[in-house]
Amino acid sequence: MSQETHQAPSADDLQALENLKKAYASVRAELGKVIVGQELVIEQLLVAIFAQGHCLLEGVPGLAKTLMVSTLAKSLKLLFSRIQFTPDLMPSDITGTEVIQENRSTGERAFKFLTGPVFSNIVLADEINRTPPKTQAAMLEAMQERQVTIGGQRHTLPSPFFVLATQNPIEQEGTYPLPEAQQDRFMFKVFVKYPSYDEEYRIAESTTSPSSVTVTEVLSAEDIIRLQQLVRRVPVAPHVIHYALRLVRATRVHEQEAPAFMKDWVSWGAGPRGMQYLLLGGKARAMLEGRFFVTTDDIRAVAHPVLRHRVITNFNAESSGITSDKVIDRLLTDIPQRSAGDEVPPALARAFGS
Image 1 (cartoon, helix red, strand yellow):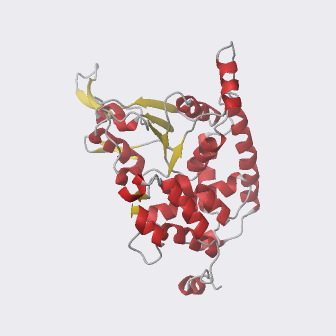
Image 2 (image 1 turned 120 degrees about the horizontal axis):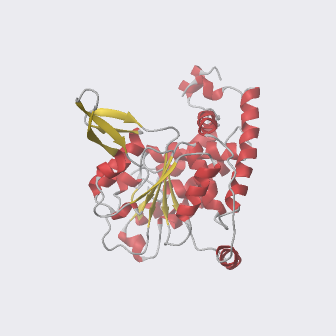
């Protein structure tokens, strides 16, 4: 932790914060021209983008996941590509490949790298669980390292870089489910649910009649990069960090902090990456609401998408109909937002003179 994290925001920071709040409202308005409902999903996608995280979306076909992401890319003036994952998809189909190219003037031949669809700002990995683990691994390596290695040469992916992967929760025949360690690379796991009656009426009315919608660009790639850097500088009070730590450590059944119900329902809990994403998600959410500080409510707001794929329920829970979301609900009810021990650790207090 650096001392810069604890500095007060400058006038430029506050102006950027105000600009982001206005841009956030504009992006939602632009998406509203095309997408009906799904407001929570849109909020979580934007939080992940500004926190430099990736999302795993789970929902049945026909819920406009692809349309939502492509429209978001247009409103953010970002390069968008879609990869349809299939059982015969090869890693080179994603990352790109080297081909031999002849120089017509000299007759010499040399390898030239042809970039794959992963070289975009927003990549939609459609039905990622339909491709073999080798191809999944190539995609997840690009997500983690933000680069690909072909023929011993490293090729840096464009910035910002954001992966949205989808998977169908119903049909599991012919799929290769993502292992928990691979799911952990995703900041959020977002559930895309069916629309309400009124929303579905509006969908039926708007999509079955002639219509022409123009999406206005709100933020550029350079704007997003600056705001991503600003998110990291949003300060977090010690009691908020302690709250995030209590939530994460309570999911680990072998820790003393784990409640009794966790040991009855959970096999494995969240690792340190879960805590990091709780704080980064809280920072990004605070900024989108025009605040340069994080509250425990921000942590609670991102707890489900951050933890639901990191809390692995056991057979006892599954046989009783207890899902990871219900476990998180119980945690948010039982874990206190403030505790008597929520002071700055002595080492940090000495470092920052507090």
